[in-house]
Image (tube, rainbow over all chains, first blue to last red; front, side):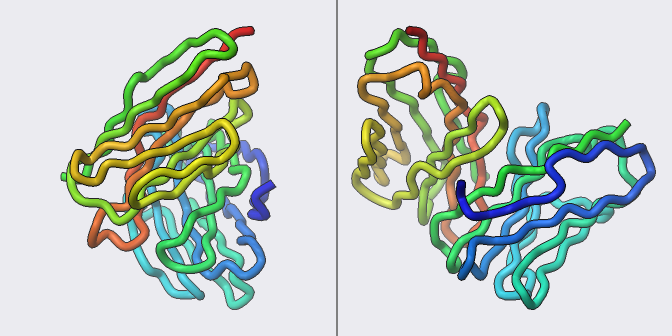
Length: 112
Length: 110
């Protein structure tokens, strides 16, 4: 158990819908990362937050957005869902920038 | 372009064998991570290293900065080591963004 929690574990929804994935980092960790793992693209970095502020952006679609709240938990919002958004979404956290990252169990999103 | 390549893609071994998984990257990095992903999907961080060698139990990770190459070794492999092993690089100037290799699927048979 890494100490990073993600909810929900599984999510099944329809095209066009909007979902919110939630991540709670390890106690004391200030940095949160979001990753997408799909069958055809592998693992890809989406976005990073540090102490409430966006720090780095990767291959995140405009339909996706994220935020980190004052209590340091983070949410990833996915809207206008398409079939191709079906993937595992991982959150990771680290104590500070440049440190080892600890991964949550992931949320498996299925878009039908 | 920042790229990470792993080899082999698939690896089968008999229990007790010594395993080596290789990772090479295109340009300078600030750190390299080795991750393990089990069939259930969960990802575990095994090592983060920027130079030299690290050891944890039967796992050893090495990195050669000049050759832009890292290896993950598993000694006395066991069926429970069966998983996908992924290397990920944090390239210089890219803050914390990780670029991932495609993974090596390891199966260890009793």
